[in-house]
Image 1 (cartoon, one colour):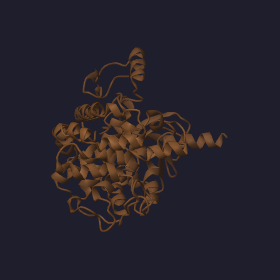
Image 2 (image 1 turned 30 degrees about the vertical axis):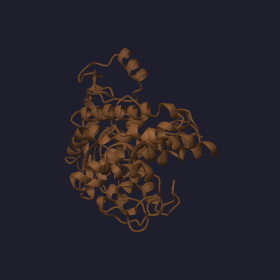
Image 3 (image 1 turned 90 degrees about the vertical axis):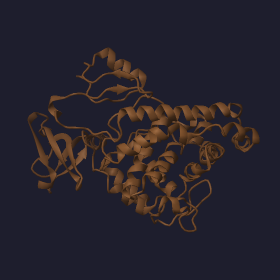
Image 4 (image 1 turned 135 degrees about the vertical axis):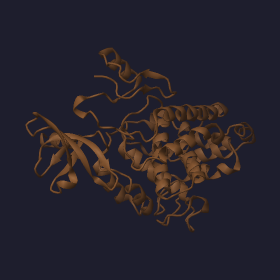
Length: 394
Protein backbone atom coordinates (compact mmCIF):
# COMPACT_ATOMS: atom_id res chain seq x y z
CA UNK A 1 0.00 0.00 0.00
CA UNK A 2 1.11 3.55 -0.69
CA UNK A 3 -0.05 6.80 0.89
CA UNK A 4 -2.74 8.50 -1.20
CA UNK A 5 -2.73 11.84 0.62
CA UNK A 6 0.15 13.42 2.53
CA UNK A 7 -0.10 12.81 6.27
CA UNK A 8 0.34 15.96 8.34
CA UNK A 9 0.70 16.63 12.02
CA UNK A 10 -1.70 19.08 13.65
CA UNK A 11 0.94 21.77 13.08
CA UNK A 12 1.39 21.16 9.37
CA UNK A 13 4.57 19.07 9.43
CA UNK A 14 4.62 16.24 6.88
CA UNK A 15 4.95 12.80 8.45
CA UNK A 16 4.60 10.82 5.23
CA UNK A 17 4.41 12.19 1.70
CA UNK A 18 1.96 10.96 -0.91
CA UNK A 19 3.30 7.89 -2.72
CA UNK A 20 5.37 6.59 0.18
CA UNK A 21 5.06 2.83 0.62
CA UNK A 22 3.51 1.85 3.95
CA UNK A 23 5.77 -0.52 5.86
CA UNK A 24 4.82 -2.27 9.09
CA UNK A 25 7.10 0.18 10.91
CA UNK A 26 5.25 3.17 9.46
CA UNK A 27 1.86 1.67 10.34
CA UNK A 28 2.88 1.01 13.94
CA UNK A 29 4.33 4.51 14.20
CA UNK A 30 1.11 6.08 12.93
CA UNK A 31 -0.94 4.05 15.41
CA UNK A 32 1.35 5.16 18.22
CA UNK A 33 0.82 8.77 17.16
CA UNK A 34 -2.96 8.36 17.41
CA UNK A 35 -4.03 7.85 13.79
CA UNK A 36 -6.90 5.41 13.32
CA UNK A 37 -6.99 5.45 9.51
CA UNK A 38 -5.37 7.05 6.47
CA UNK A 39 -6.07 7.09 2.73
CA UNK A 40 -4.11 4.64 0.59
CA UNK A 41 -3.79 4.01 -3.14
CA UNK A 42 -5.82 1.03 -4.29
CA UNK A 43 -6.14 -0.29 -7.84
CA UNK A 44 -9.73 -1.38 -7.22
CA UNK A 45 -10.77 2.15 -6.32
CA UNK A 46 -8.51 4.03 -8.73
CA UNK A 47 -10.13 7.20 -10.00
CA UNK A 48 -12.38 7.63 -6.98
CA UNK A 49 -11.59 11.00 -5.48
CA UNK A 50 -12.33 11.38 -1.77
CA UNK A 51 -12.79 15.16 -1.49
CA UNK A 52 -11.40 17.46 1.16
CA UNK A 53 -13.86 19.90 2.71
CA UNK A 54 -10.86 22.00 3.69
CA UNK A 55 -7.28 21.31 2.68
CA UNK A 56 -4.96 19.48 5.03
CA UNK A 57 -2.72 22.56 5.10
CA UNK A 58 -5.57 24.84 6.21
CA UNK A 59 -6.72 22.30 8.80
CA UNK A 60 -3.20 22.00 10.20
CA UNK A 61 -2.67 25.75 10.29
CA UNK A 62 -5.96 26.51 12.06
CA UNK A 63 -5.28 23.67 14.50
CA UNK A 64 -1.97 25.28 15.41
CA UNK A 65 -3.52 28.73 15.85
CA UNK A 66 -6.39 27.32 17.88
CA UNK A 67 -3.93 25.47 20.09
CA UNK A 68 -2.01 28.73 20.52
CA UNK A 69 -5.21 30.52 21.56
CA UNK A 70 -6.28 27.83 24.02
CA UNK A 71 -2.73 27.80 25.38
CA UNK A 72 -2.85 31.54 25.98
CA UNK A 73 -6.05 31.15 27.98
CA UNK A 74 -4.53 28.29 29.99
CA UNK A 75 -1.54 30.49 30.81
CA UNK A 76 -3.56 33.41 32.17
CA UNK A 77 -5.81 31.07 34.18
CA UNK A 78 -3.11 28.75 35.54
CA UNK A 79 -3.86 29.86 39.10
CA UNK A 80 -7.44 28.62 38.67
CA UNK A 81 -6.38 25.17 37.51
CA UNK A 82 -7.82 22.45 39.75
CA UNK A 83 -10.04 24.86 41.68
CA UNK A 84 -13.76 24.15 42.30
CA UNK A 85 -15.77 25.42 39.34
CA UNK A 86 -17.54 28.11 41.37
CA UNK A 87 -14.14 29.55 42.27
CA UNK A 88 -13.07 29.30 38.63
CA UNK A 89 -16.16 31.30 37.63
CA UNK A 90 -15.41 33.93 40.27
CA UNK A 91 -11.79 34.14 39.13
CA UNK A 92 -12.85 34.69 35.51
CA UNK A 93 -14.85 37.73 36.62
CA UNK A 94 -11.99 39.32 38.57
CA UNK A 95 -10.19 42.48 37.48
CA UNK A 96 -6.88 40.62 37.42
CA UNK A 97 -8.20 38.12 34.87
CA UNK A 98 -9.83 40.82 32.74
CA UNK A 99 -6.53 42.69 32.49
CA UNK A 100 -4.66 39.53 31.46
CA UNK A 101 -7.31 38.29 29.02
CA UNK A 102 -7.54 41.67 27.31
CA UNK A 103 -4.23 40.86 25.60
CA UNK A 104 -5.68 37.69 23.99
CA UNK A 105 -7.48 38.23 20.69
CA UNK A 106 -8.70 34.94 19.16
CA UNK A 107 -10.12 36.62 16.07
CA UNK A 108 -6.93 38.47 15.22
CA UNK A 109 -4.85 35.34 15.87
CA UNK A 110 -6.95 33.15 13.59
CA UNK A 111 -8.45 35.57 11.05
CA UNK A 112 -6.13 34.62 8.17
CA UNK A 113 -6.89 30.92 8.59
CA UNK A 114 -10.60 31.62 9.09
CA UNK A 115 -10.63 33.44 5.75
CA UNK A 116 -8.91 30.46 4.12
CA UNK A 117 -11.46 28.07 5.63
CA UNK A 118 -14.33 30.19 4.33
CA UNK A 119 -12.71 30.44 0.89
CA UNK A 120 -12.20 26.66 0.74
CA UNK A 121 -15.80 25.94 1.72
CA UNK A 122 -17.27 28.44 -0.75
CA UNK A 123 -16.15 26.02 -3.47
CA UNK A 124 -17.76 22.97 -1.80
CA UNK A 125 -21.36 21.96 -2.52
CA UNK A 126 -21.68 18.77 -0.45
CA UNK A 127 -20.52 17.87 3.07
CA UNK A 128 -18.49 14.94 1.79
CA UNK A 129 -15.15 13.65 3.04
CA UNK A 130 -15.23 15.33 6.46
CA UNK A 131 -14.25 12.09 8.19
CA UNK A 132 -11.95 10.76 5.48
CA UNK A 133 -8.84 11.47 7.51
CA UNK A 134 -8.10 13.13 10.83
CA UNK A 135 -4.96 14.92 11.86
CA UNK A 136 -3.30 13.50 14.91
CA UNK A 137 -3.69 15.82 17.85
CA UNK A 138 -5.84 17.12 20.66
CA UNK A 139 -9.41 15.76 20.46
CA UNK A 140 -10.87 19.13 21.44
CA UNK A 141 -9.07 20.90 18.60
CA UNK A 142 -10.22 18.39 15.99
CA UNK A 143 -13.80 18.47 17.27
CA UNK A 144 -13.81 22.28 17.16
CA UNK A 145 -12.51 22.37 13.58
CA UNK A 146 -15.01 19.78 12.33
CA UNK A 147 -17.91 21.60 14.00
CA UNK A 148 -16.70 24.75 12.25
CA UNK A 149 -16.71 23.03 8.85
CA UNK A 150 -20.27 21.79 9.35
CA UNK A 151 -21.47 25.16 10.68
CA UNK A 152 -19.99 26.97 7.69
CA UNK A 153 -21.74 24.59 5.31
CA UNK A 154 -25.03 25.43 7.02
CA UNK A 155 -24.18 29.13 6.87
CA UNK A 156 -23.44 28.82 3.18
CA UNK A 157 -26.86 27.22 2.63
CA UNK A 158 -28.39 30.24 4.38
CA UNK A 159 -26.44 32.52 2.01
CA UNK A 160 -24.70 34.33 4.84
CA UNK A 161 -22.26 36.96 3.66
CA UNK A 162 -18.50 36.52 4.23
CA UNK A 163 -18.46 38.72 7.34
CA UNK A 164 -21.17 36.62 9.00
CA UNK A 165 -19.42 33.41 7.93
CA UNK A 166 -16.18 34.56 9.54
CA UNK A 167 -17.94 35.36 12.82
CA UNK A 168 -19.71 31.99 12.64
CA UNK A 169 -16.33 30.30 12.16
CA UNK A 170 -14.83 32.08 15.16
CA UNK A 171 -17.77 31.13 17.39
CA UNK A 172 -17.56 27.52 16.22
CA UNK A 173 -13.82 27.27 16.83
CA UNK A 174 -14.06 28.50 20.43
CA UNK A 175 -17.48 27.03 21.35
CA UNK A 176 -16.02 24.37 23.65
CA UNK A 177 -13.18 26.37 25.19
CA UNK A 178 -14.88 26.06 28.60
CA UNK A 179 -14.03 22.34 28.60
CA UNK A 180 -10.44 23.28 29.36
CA UNK A 181 -11.63 23.67 32.97
CA UNK A 182 -13.37 20.29 33.11
CA UNK A 183 -11.35 17.30 34.30
CA UNK A 184 -10.15 15.45 31.20
CA UNK A 185 -11.16 12.16 32.83
CA UNK A 186 -14.77 13.42 32.74
CA UNK A 187 -14.60 14.74 29.16
CA UNK A 188 -13.17 11.45 27.82
CA UNK A 189 -14.91 9.02 30.19
CA UNK A 190 -15.75 5.79 28.27
CA UNK A 191 -19.09 5.25 30.06
CA UNK A 192 -22.07 7.35 31.23
CA UNK A 193 -21.28 10.23 33.57
CA UNK A 194 -22.40 10.23 37.19
CA UNK A 195 -24.79 12.95 38.36
CA UNK A 196 -21.92 14.92 39.87
CA UNK A 197 -19.78 14.60 36.75
CA UNK A 198 -22.69 15.66 34.55
CA UNK A 199 -23.28 18.73 36.74
CA UNK A 200 -19.64 19.71 36.18
CA UNK A 201 -19.87 19.11 32.43
CA UNK A 202 -22.92 21.36 32.21
CA UNK A 203 -20.80 24.23 33.50
CA UNK A 204 -18.56 24.42 30.43
CA UNK A 205 -20.77 26.82 28.38
CA UNK A 206 -20.86 29.40 31.19
CA UNK A 207 -17.14 29.04 31.89
CA UNK A 208 -16.36 29.37 28.20
CA UNK A 209 -18.37 32.57 27.98
CA UNK A 210 -16.71 34.05 31.08
CA UNK A 211 -13.30 33.05 29.70
CA UNK A 212 -13.93 34.73 26.34
CA UNK A 213 -15.85 37.88 27.19
CA UNK A 214 -12.81 39.73 28.55
CA UNK A 215 -10.73 38.88 25.48
CA UNK A 216 -10.57 40.28 21.97
CA UNK A 217 -12.74 43.19 20.88
CA UNK A 218 -16.45 44.02 21.25
CA UNK A 219 -17.09 42.77 17.70
CA UNK A 220 -16.40 39.24 18.97
CA UNK A 221 -19.44 39.34 21.29
CA UNK A 222 -21.54 37.05 19.08
CA UNK A 223 -18.78 34.43 19.11
CA UNK A 224 -18.62 34.61 22.91
CA UNK A 225 -22.35 33.88 23.11
CA UNK A 226 -21.91 30.80 20.91
CA UNK A 227 -19.84 29.31 23.73
CA UNK A 228 -22.62 30.30 26.16
CA UNK A 229 -25.63 29.08 24.16
CA UNK A 230 -24.63 26.09 22.02
CA UNK A 231 -26.33 23.64 24.44
CA UNK A 232 -29.61 25.56 24.68
CA UNK A 233 -32.63 23.78 23.17
CA UNK A 234 -35.61 24.89 21.13
CA UNK A 235 -38.04 23.60 23.77
CA UNK A 236 -36.26 25.33 26.66
CA UNK A 237 -34.81 22.18 28.26
CA UNK A 238 -31.18 22.99 27.44
CA UNK A 239 -28.47 24.51 29.59
CA UNK A 240 -27.13 26.63 31.21
CA UNK A 241 -30.10 29.05 31.11
CA UNK A 242 -33.02 27.11 29.64
CA UNK A 243 -33.55 29.50 26.71
CA UNK A 244 -36.19 28.71 24.10
CA UNK A 245 -36.04 28.79 20.29
CA UNK A 246 -38.53 29.55 17.53
CA UNK A 247 -37.44 26.95 14.92
CA UNK A 248 -37.11 29.75 12.38
CA UNK A 249 -34.04 30.90 10.47
CA UNK A 250 -32.90 34.47 10.99
CA UNK A 251 -29.87 36.39 9.81
CA UNK A 252 -26.88 36.09 12.15
CA UNK A 253 -26.47 39.82 12.78
CA UNK A 254 -30.13 40.36 13.66
CA UNK A 255 -29.32 39.31 17.21
CA UNK A 256 -31.85 37.37 19.22
CA UNK A 257 -34.39 35.12 17.53
CA UNK A 258 -37.71 36.49 18.74
CA UNK A 259 -38.08 36.52 22.51
CA UNK A 260 -36.19 33.28 23.03
CA UNK A 261 -32.77 34.81 23.59
CA UNK A 262 -31.00 32.09 21.56
CA UNK A 263 -28.77 33.69 18.96
CA UNK A 264 -29.13 32.27 15.43
CA UNK A 265 -25.34 31.85 15.25
CA UNK A 266 -25.50 29.65 18.37
CA UNK A 267 -28.38 27.60 16.92
CA UNK A 268 -26.27 26.87 13.83
CA UNK A 269 -23.37 25.67 15.96
CA UNK A 270 -25.76 23.54 18.06
CA UNK A 271 -26.81 21.63 14.92
CA UNK A 272 -23.21 21.29 13.73
CA UNK A 273 -22.10 20.12 17.18
CA UNK A 274 -24.71 17.34 17.30
CA UNK A 275 -23.91 16.20 13.76
CA UNK A 276 -20.19 16.01 14.51
CA UNK A 277 -20.85 14.12 17.74
CA UNK A 278 -23.02 11.53 15.98
CA UNK A 279 -20.63 10.99 13.06
CA UNK A 280 -17.43 10.63 15.11
CA UNK A 281 -16.21 7.84 17.36
CA UNK A 282 -16.31 8.69 21.03
CA UNK A 283 -14.61 7.06 24.02
CA UNK A 284 -17.90 5.42 25.02
CA UNK A 285 -19.23 4.36 21.57
CA UNK A 286 -18.44 3.95 17.89
CA UNK A 287 -19.56 6.50 15.31
CA UNK A 288 -23.10 6.08 14.04
CA UNK A 289 -23.54 4.88 10.47
CA UNK A 290 -23.83 7.83 8.08
CA UNK A 291 -27.18 6.73 6.68
CA UNK A 292 -28.74 6.79 10.15
CA UNK A 293 -27.66 10.32 11.04
CA UNK A 294 -30.16 12.35 8.96
CA UNK A 295 -33.03 10.49 10.61
CA UNK A 296 -31.52 11.01 14.06
CA UNK A 297 -31.21 14.73 13.40
CA UNK A 298 -34.82 14.88 12.24
CA UNK A 299 -35.91 13.26 15.50
CA UNK A 300 -34.16 16.08 17.39
CA UNK A 301 -35.51 18.82 15.12
CA UNK A 302 -38.13 21.08 16.65
CA UNK A 303 -37.42 20.18 20.27
CA UNK A 304 -33.63 20.10 20.64
CA UNK A 305 -32.46 21.62 17.35
CA UNK A 306 -33.80 24.37 15.11
CA UNK A 307 -35.81 22.45 12.51
CA UNK A 308 -35.08 24.86 9.63
CA UNK A 309 -31.36 24.63 10.31
CA UNK A 310 -31.54 20.82 10.37
CA UNK A 311 -33.19 21.01 6.95
CA UNK A 312 -30.40 23.32 5.73
CA UNK A 313 -27.80 20.76 6.81
CA UNK A 314 -29.78 17.88 5.32
CA UNK A 315 -29.67 19.63 1.93
CA UNK A 316 -25.88 19.14 1.74
CA UNK A 317 -25.56 15.71 3.41
CA UNK A 318 -24.90 12.71 1.16
CA UNK A 319 -26.46 9.44 2.25
CA UNK A 320 -23.00 7.88 2.62
CA UNK A 321 -19.74 9.76 1.88
CA UNK A 322 -17.47 9.02 -1.05
CA UNK A 323 -15.01 6.18 -0.47
CA UNK A 324 -17.12 4.47 2.21
CA UNK A 325 -17.45 0.67 1.99
CA UNK A 326 -21.05 -0.36 1.34
CA UNK A 327 -23.29 -3.39 0.81
CA UNK A 328 -26.13 -3.43 -1.72
CA UNK A 329 -29.53 -4.53 -0.45
CA UNK A 330 -32.25 -5.56 -2.90
CA UNK A 331 -32.44 -5.54 -6.66
CA UNK A 332 -30.12 -6.90 -9.30
CA UNK A 333 -26.98 -6.52 -7.19
CA UNK A 334 -28.33 -7.66 -3.84
CA UNK A 335 -25.48 -8.85 -1.62
CA UNK A 336 -22.70 -7.20 -3.64
CA UNK A 337 -20.09 -5.20 -1.75
CA UNK A 338 -18.40 -2.05 -3.01
CA UNK A 339 -17.66 1.60 -2.27
CA UNK A 340 -19.38 4.90 -2.88
CA UNK A 341 -17.68 6.20 -6.03
CA UNK A 342 -19.28 9.58 -6.67
CA UNK A 343 -21.88 11.88 -5.16
CA UNK A 344 -24.42 13.61 -7.41
CA UNK A 345 -25.25 17.02 -5.90
CA UNK A 346 -28.79 16.80 -7.28
CA UNK A 347 -29.38 13.28 -5.91
CA UNK A 348 -27.53 13.04 -2.60
CA UNK A 349 -29.30 9.82 -1.57
CA UNK A 350 -28.59 7.96 -4.84
CA UNK A 351 -24.83 8.01 -5.49
CA UNK A 352 -22.74 6.13 -7.99
CA UNK A 353 -21.18 3.01 -6.46
CA UNK A 354 -18.33 0.75 -7.57
CA UNK A 355 -18.95 -2.96 -7.07
CA UNK A 356 -15.93 -4.94 -5.89
CA UNK A 357 -17.21 -8.39 -4.88
CA UNK A 358 -20.28 -10.58 -5.36
CA UNK A 359 -22.48 -12.06 -2.61
CA UNK A 360 -20.07 -15.00 -2.23
CA UNK A 361 -17.18 -12.62 -1.58
CA UNK A 362 -15.51 -13.25 -4.95
CA UNK A 363 -13.83 -10.29 -6.64
CA UNK A 364 -15.78 -9.03 -9.64
CA UNK A 365 -14.82 -7.22 -12.79
CA UNK A 366 -14.90 -3.65 -11.58
CA UNK A 367 -17.82 -1.56 -12.75
CA UNK A 368 -19.71 1.50 -11.54
CA UNK A 369 -23.46 1.60 -11.02
CA UNK A 370 -25.71 4.66 -10.88
CA UNK A 371 -28.30 3.98 -8.18
CA UNK A 372 -30.72 6.30 -9.96
CA UNK A 373 -31.05 3.49 -12.52
CA UNK A 374 -31.77 0.92 -9.78
CA UNK A 375 -34.61 2.26 -7.63
CA UNK A 376 -35.19 -1.22 -6.19
CA UNK A 377 -31.72 -1.21 -4.60
CA UNK A 378 -30.48 0.58 -1.52
CA UNK A 379 -27.09 0.67 0.13
CA UNK A 380 -25.91 0.46 3.69
CA UNK A 381 -22.45 1.08 5.09
CA UNK A 382 -20.41 -1.99 5.95
CA UNK A 383 -20.48 -0.76 9.54
CA UNK A 384 -24.25 -1.40 9.62
CA UNK A 385 -23.81 -4.77 7.92
CA UNK A 386 -21.24 -5.92 10.47
CA UNK A 387 -23.47 -4.81 13.35
CA UNK A 388 -26.36 -6.81 11.87
CA UNK A 389 -24.14 -9.90 11.54
CA UNK A 390 -22.99 -9.57 15.15
CA UNK A 391 -26.58 -9.26 16.38
CA UNK A 392 -27.64 -12.31 14.34
CA UNK A 393 -24.77 -14.27 15.86
CA UNK A 394 -26.04 -13.38 19.34
